[in-house]
Image (cartoon, rainbow, N blue to C red):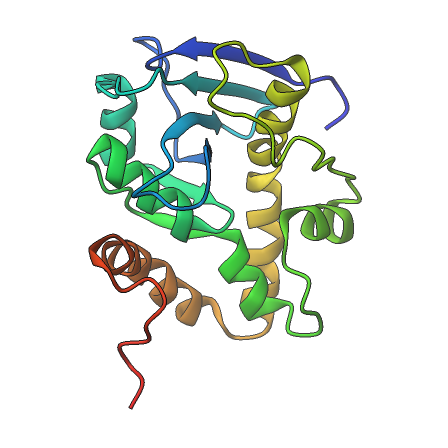
Length: 207
């Protein structure tokens, strides 16, 4: 991606008329990692075209009909990195289940068995030769005014997911794990419901 990304910040919802075709990369920022305690602050999206759309939420204001319609659109594949968190917090605050889902972290764990480094930063560096900054990862996403650095960080989490998916799909196909990955992706919404219903750290398949 040679040109600087175009980042648009929206308040409360996506604008009417904004559409995505085939797939959309999605990420979220919250006040923490516990969806029962930590509110959803920002959702970011990209069509893989170098543009990023960020939706910022005020406390308690999660109507967002356009965004909800997009999440519920089963003709759109939603690409996440570590979908388990994002799908769960989107369901908790927006009341909608994201399906179908593709998770680049799961794909990486199935395809890149030669490493234990499956973070987005590591993936972008190895596969795309892109250095991502994680300096704003632990910043105050609930602030009324987000800084330019926060906006750039949030955008970077979705701008490269389409490219990563394409490369990881090639690796999964080569290693004969495409079907296994698809079955894992299909289970994500159920895994998230288990998290939200009180089984976040318990393996229900254990003896």
